[in-house]
Image 1: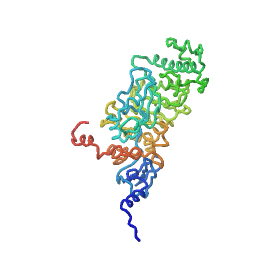
Image 2: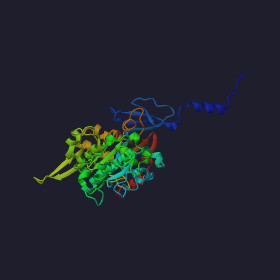
Image 3: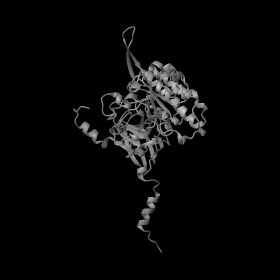
Image 4: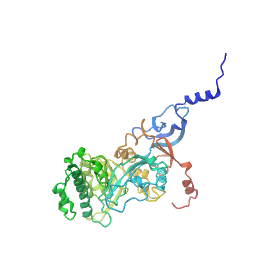
Length: 448
């Protein structure tokens, strides 16, 4: 006797055979794939499953239920990473000189135009951190540039504490530096008081507590190694100090902005005196200290100012001299991540100024004679390393997040467009679905 199988059961069985929904499997076929981890593939295919890169190669077999993005003339590469930015922030700085207790998570607007324009520029991940006008600016966060809420955007938080050696408005450099030293001295005294459950040692309770006695503050070096952290009741740490405790314990890195080359010496002082795990954010004239930076043990990659070329007048000859900071640092063996000059309202936008575009900053490195591979790393792998996320992003390799940007041509060519941005395998931007861009290009004579 033949049994009839219900059509409903057949449909259920077919559904069960599919390992994943079609939208969870994506294949990007491109004329070229820049992996950053190794040689380019021409052509290449990237297979993405459940938000991660499953495989990359020339002749990959594409599953039947995969959604295929076909760009035969396009170039796919790891999505760009902004290592130090204010993307998405309503206000880049607080109005008080010391604000370690604030977090950028309270100031990010997911609907900000800076986020939209960053995606349009090929950027998928940004390290959002307070700007440079506050001595202790607050806590940063690494975010994916997609999501309806801040919680959906967050990758890592807190990602770092912002310190700036550029004096806040109304202060001299001497005042600002003395106040920064005093902050760490006071923090030590507070923690030591909690640990011993008694008044701080006399040498920390008197002179360093008075900012007027600059000599005492300059010579103070809090003996953090004497703190037995297991004995410190951290729940009793004053709210304004809690985030700084993680900084001096090495759990939260510091990002120290040095507006001038001379600030680097002060940064080293603060780092050494308090045992800080630090990434330096350097000013345009950092080329002056290339040898010093190269000799610093354990420094790691730095973040460069958006102004990559500095012109100065020779005091003896009166002639103008050009200094290419990234080339000088690269030749000294220093690796770095790049920044874009962001408009606080619109972000990268459609400015004619190249400094507003991260890909343009990388293209300048090649123009200055740096290897192309190193230029691409400065906007992908190196920022990922600075943020401690190189195991997740920065290259196209199996197992990493599927953060992919597809350009219409060479990513370092000004004639190329960002066609597609995927963040963890999900579509975050498509040029053919960008109404603002369509309106802009509709009138070729329109100023932008």
